[in-house]
Length: 326
Image (cartoon, rainbow, N blue to C red):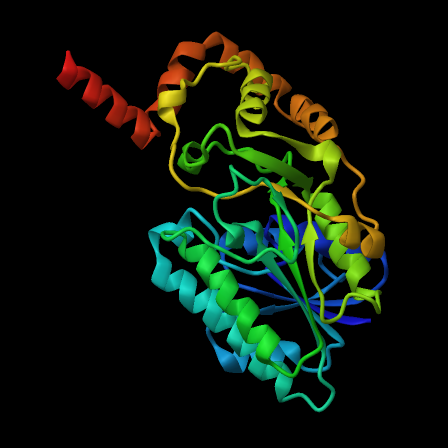
């Protein structure tokens, strides 16, 4: 099958790309040209067709979509960049999706569209953590990324295309373990359900070959064996890194609205049969990945802890208030 994959060199994109190649599909990717992506492209030389371009440029998008059977649209500006530069995110996420829709509609043989949305569209679910695909989206007021994903979904549903929308949960990868300040934005009591990036790639690859997904909005998440709370997840990860369980105080974390929760995935699992990894599998992968780093972290644990806490605006605010009260 002739497939166009956008965002192929991102976390989910790479997993999807590898699955598609393994199945012998004719894969064309559409990616932004930068030094990181050029380096990654060398690994797939002679295996894929690469079109460098920008989703904001309709002419470049139109060239990429020609003679494709299916478009898997994964590319997006995600947080924290989406929070720091919402205008850029809107132009790429919403404007880029609109360009894809228009380009598909111009084709004599219109390819089908698979679009990856986000659990973020449901907003804060601490009081009611189990999310069904039929639940009404309710993005948090300040979550521009979630609102953009909802706009994209609306544009797709109003189009005349054959489409499928996959709302993704919190996607994890042992190759993406950077501790970004966004880690402090999620309240500790939040319920989370992870999904291994390899399982997401499998779901998307299976979707290409399915006749049952079209016109459906499905959840993609890891299943019951991938569920935990953010507090427990964070403790386990900090322990694996050698920083220590309970190393970061509750005062370092946001207490206001965020998102995540448990996602009902019975239908997506029935159609796509992709849930292969549990959260314990992921912990084992992380343990192997950070084995050498852990020695360094344990040695310099107080410094590492102080470095992490310095990234938390909530902890800084807490210290400032404590100082004033003293």
